[in-house]
Amino acid sequence: MNWNLTDDQRMVRDMVREFVAAEVTPNAAEWDRDKRFPTEVFEKLGELGLFGMTVDEDNGGAGLDLSGYCLALEELARGDASTCVAISVTNSLFCAPLQRYGTAAQKARFLRPCAGGEWLGAFCLSEPEVGSDAAALKTSARRDGDDFVLTGAKAWVTNGAVCGAMLVFAVTDPDASRGRLSAFVVPADHPGVAIVHEEDKLGIRSSRTNQVAFDECRVPGEWMVGEEGQGLDVALRSLDGGRAGIAAQAVGIAHAALELTLSYVVERQAFGGPIGRFAGLQGELATMATHIRAARLLYLRAAWLRDHGEPDTMAASSAKLFASEMANRVSYQAVQMHGGYGYVTDYPVERLYRDARVTTIYEGTSEIQRLVIARQLIAAAG
Ligand code: CAA
Image (tube, rainbow, N blue to C red):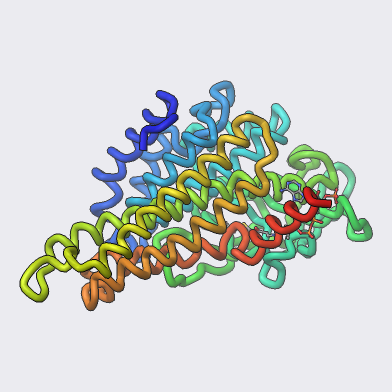
C-alpha cells in the first residue's frame, strides 16, 4: 500500500523489507527451533539505524515519524515476530520515553548509544504479581541522600538478558494515591541488577523474556527519568506508542500468514484441481485480506495522530485490540487452510500461529485495551 506515504516512510519500509527478505525470513524457523537470539542480525539492524528510529538526529537517531517506524515494524514481523518485538521494545519503550522525558545527560549517556545501535533497551514495568494494574506495582525506590535504592522483582522483560540499559518503574511515594511511581534508567550491568529467569515461551521463542531482580540497587538521582511521581504517566504515554507498534507487528504476522496461504492454495491439488478454486476458501481469504488492510489503516491512524500531536490513546488501543485479535484469527485460518501441513514445523504458518498469540497479551491485554477504549468513549459522552 503506497497510498499517502511520504518518501521517508516508503524508503524505510522498502529498506527493511529488503533486509528482512535477505537476512531474517530465511533463518526465522531455525532461530525459533533453537530459541536462539540472533546477535549477528541485531548488529546489522543497529547499523541500519533501527534501534532509535523515532529518536531525533541530534541524539543519534533516524528522525522518523511513528508512521514510518510502524511500517518498518510490520516488515520485520513479516519475517520474524521475535526480531520485531526486540526492536519494538527498544524503540517504543526505551528510546521514546528517554527522548521525551530524558535530561541532556541521560540522552548523552543512555539514548545516543542505544539509538546508534550499540545496544538494545528494555522496559521493566510488570512484576510477577502485577501486570494489568500497572499503578499497583511494588518494586520500591527508597531515597537515600542523592541516591535511590531499588528493590523488587520485574517480570516479562523483553530483551532483559540482551539489553544495555533498562527503564525501570518503582514506587517512590508509597503513601500517595497519585504520583506513587517514578521511572529510572539503569544500566543492565549495574551492581544490584540480576537476570534471574528466562521464560520458555509458546511463541516469539528467539526473543528473550526475563525476570529481573533489583537487590539494593543504588542509582544516582540523576537517573530518574521525568519528575518524581511522574512514573505512571511516563509508562502509559510510552505504551500508547508501543501499542501502535504491536498493532503493526500483528499486521506483519497476519500478512505473512496470508501470503503463505495464497501460495499454498494455488499449489495444493484436491478433487481434481487447486484448492483455491473452492468458494469456501475464497471467502475466508477475502475476509483475511480485508481485515489485514483494516488493521493497517488503524495503526497508521494511531501513528498519524501521535505524529501530529493529537490525542492517540484510544486510537492506539483500538489498533492494538483489532490487529492482535485479527492476527490470531488470520493465523488460525492459515493453519486450517494448510490442513495437516499447517500443524507441522516444516511449514512456517505453525510458527506464525504461535507468534500471533502473544499480541493480545503483551503491552496491555485485549481486556485492558477494551477498558481504555470504553473509558475514553464514556468520558467523551459525559
Ligand atoms: N497516557 C498518559 N497518562 C495516562 C494515560 C495515558 N495513556 N492513561 C491514563 N493516564 C493517567 C491518568 O490521567 C491518571 O492520571 P491522574 O492520576 O493524574 O489523573 C493516571 O494515569 C491513572 O489513570 P487511570 O485512573 O486510568 O489508571 P488505572 O490504574 O485505573 O488504569 C490502565 C490504567 C489503563 C489499566 C493501565 O494500568 C494499563 O494500561 N495497564 C496495562 C499495562 C500494560 O500495558 N502492561 C504491559 C507491560 S509492557 C510489556 O508488555 C513488556 C514487554 O517487554 C513487551
